[in-house]
Image 1: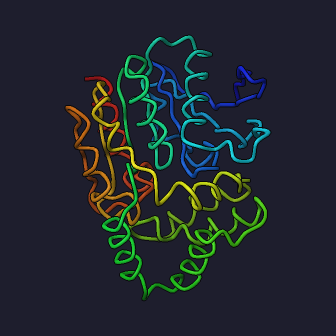
Image 2 (image 1 turned 180 degrees about the vertical axis):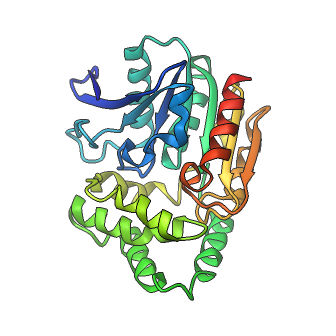
Length: 282
């Protein structure tokens, strides 16, 4: 575990793994650490993975302001990590909400990103995305876990939790929706995430004020770095309908992985590793 101090005196931590060119990785949530990346589909065999634990997670200090979890706050922390690593330009990967941060960063600082990977992410959430999400959940109605996962998701989105631990339990219960198929391997993966202490303040702010209002589309044409957009065909929340918005990034390439949900580095481990490695080495 590496750490550094930010300009305002907070400690941020990151996990470093592998050998090769540095690939900075930002996880999602918001409010979750890099723990769920695991070994990120084995990309450490080719790259030095620097997986940031965002503010408030896994050894990274919480800001004094409980509202300091805006996209711009995460972008600022990401730039401080880049400076700490001594990188003028970085290879950058963001997954889920981390992709929102990575896209916003690349739009604000196009000269500081060498190549960009936007994995299972979105530029906005509007009616068309919500319709796809609802249809995908309805398609799972016969699954034995459906009722409990649906209740947990509704409680999470409505902010019906008071502590970080309660949010962590809701997340584990709702996560079956995030897979194309929820089988033994997927259940085993979720067991590795038990004990994660997410940041409730971060997700509350996002759900209450950001989720249905943010829109990165006006900023996307400012991204001048080569960009890979990669998502799962069966991702119920950031699938192809969300990936389509990133067509506004000049010269981007989109890859849709068949039979795959939100955790593409788990469900399509080999294909994800091959696509990302080929893109970053191109």
